[in-house]
Image (tube, rainbow, N blue to C red; front, side, top):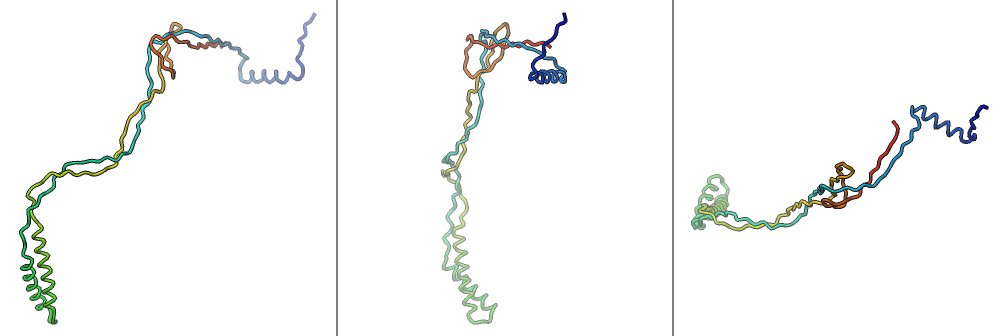
Length: 192
């Protein structure tokens, strides 16, 4: 007696045909895989702390003092202001009369000469020579930037011996040497 296949209902036929067509276009055959998840125990054999460093900059006013050498000047000789004014006035008057025929030009020259003579006498009195130096403290306030390097723990790199293997893992929790830890082991099997 011949055997007949029963066909699925007409509503399921397009879905089954679509899957078969997609697999044949891609050159794939429907493959199944199996994943197993187990818990294994391991022992911590090494712990390294992972850190991150950063710089904190803080502005601060700081008083800075230093010792500086300040020149000491000799006292200038006392100048005779009156004598310089008289000589300057006489010279100014003579020059004013010679250069101009106007009345009063000699008087204006005398005044200008007297003022110039007085000014020169004062300059001579102030311009002493440097005879030495004295030390004087000089202070000023400056804005400085203080830089502080800080570090922060970001995690831990641990070496764990489990399942006959040495595994390198990272964690955010601190662990100690010889601590016993549970590891999640996931194995997938599939046909090639």
